[in-house]
Length: 296
Length: 190
Image (cartoon, rainbow over all chains, first blue to last red; front, side, top):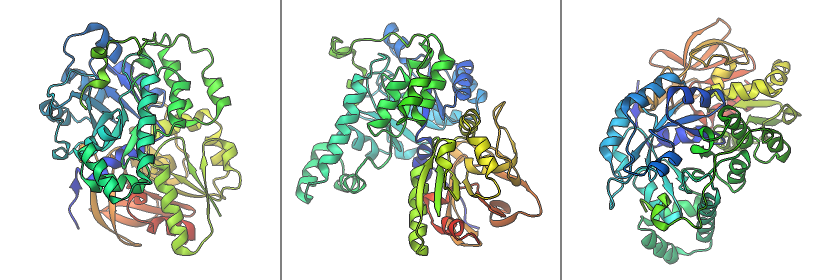
């Protein structure tokens, strides 16, 4: 009998494939994790504070206390993700040790390395990374990311940046279609990735890994918008537990993602949800406060 | 024949591609559709329950009319479940969420996520009655017990990982990621 191989590319990308069409929710404790699971989340993201609180508090945002992550893992049966700082491979090692199922090398936390991302191929547990455009996405995939999400602008409850990033990736992938080999080589140089990856992306007509939306999703309509724009699923950060009725909001966003083309259903689930999280304007936001500028 | 794929979430696209490739290999004409509501079941002869999270599937199926609609057609539909799909088909399952339910059609008992968390997810060559294949096990459920009428199509380290009972086919791994053999058997019937 052949021995088993763990941490393979297929099994890492595979878990993300199982999430497609689903919602991954940010949670900071066991109680929130249970609410997310009960609402039909496909996974939860365990973190110390939701992005809007990180924004408000300022200071350095780090990996959550292991006790907090362990309590969340113990509370639910669905996969649990954990966030580490960009380039902080020791936080990633600790998250893997704790048993998290996916590691988010996240710009929402304060970067630990301004020049390097983590060499993700060294890990058994898969990684998801944020991207604003195709170059960022391909660099992360080349470093070993098994899943991509748009960065959006986390903690704002404002969908505008996520939409911008989704459209940028869509347009840049579409542009590959009519390029010849020398133009593809130029793109590979511009994106700083091997030409093979650019060619694979051209052939697939999309990113070669699962691509979720994140960063600013606050309502069922926001979530369905990202799905109709071609995303494989959505992350909801502050949008659930900063709304006035988290249980209802969580359930409604799950329904809106499953039935993302069904306006009647979305209207129904959007009714009587209480108040969505307070939003922030992104246009007037100083550039140095934009989390999406981190880790390019 | 019309193959419906439960599309509440999960690896629906991978099943669609494997189904179409299997149909091409067999020279069969197959229509594939996504099933999100009871209405989508119309005309469906074969139903695939994909990989995903069985707790979420259970919730969404119970709160829509889908669970009852599928149960009502249990005798006439042909079923194929992989990973979470196996749990949805099982008569008995352990370690589910508080109010998680299944279709209770396949006479096996399964343990959810029994092969471990993601760091224990694995690939391995497995011998099946359909030939050698590369099996991908992702936080996979384990088949603990099976009743007499259930045929074992594949084992890994002495444990059943693919089974068939009447009109139901199920795997604890994800054949849709690596082979069309199981989809071919599903479309052929026997």
